Image 1 (cartoon, rainbow, N blue to C red):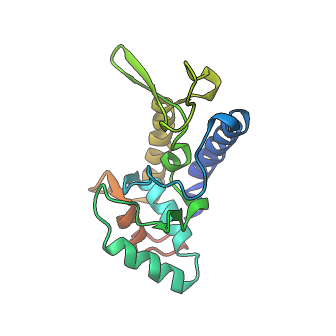
Image 2: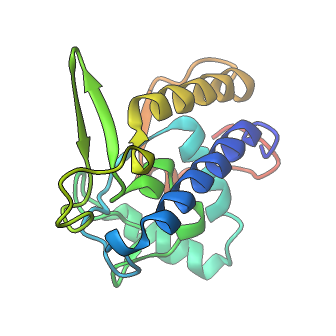
Amino acid sequence: MEDSLANYYALVTKVDELCNRIQAEFAEQLSCHAGCASCCRHITLAWVEAMALATALHKLPPNEVEAIQLRAQYAKPNGPCPLLVDDHCVMYDFRPIICRTHGLPILTEELSDSSIDCCPLNFQGSDQVPGTAVINLDRLNILLDSVNRVFINQFFTTKPEQERLTIAEALLLEIEISGDTP
């Protein structure tokens, strides 16, 4: 399993480097902090992210796995993320890529229109967000999609019926760390 996830882990490392640089360079203009969880929603994941999350979950002590899976069973679509406990992510080090970029300025482009969005608590009082603080979400999604396609081709014998899984579905996957398919 870990070999199949190598490209994803490399992408996570690059995303973390980018986010850490932005957070360091613009620390005074960012208000995101531990316990700030208003943007932590129950989202869907690409298969590669779902399997990375499930793999990380199954390496935790059994009592933690059981508690997380119990919360996942009752998670509601578009509700709070099932990994939140007292406004803190219980699997923070293993969170999906979109969670790593939450709150930071992201650029999205649709047709001929582009826009920058970020947490309204960040960059308050600034007329505009510096370009070096912006993450191009479309490019990031293209990279993630490419990594996901490679993962699916390596890991599955046939393409999965579902394109994406919710975080709860990922947490409830029964996997073998040795590499068996769910």
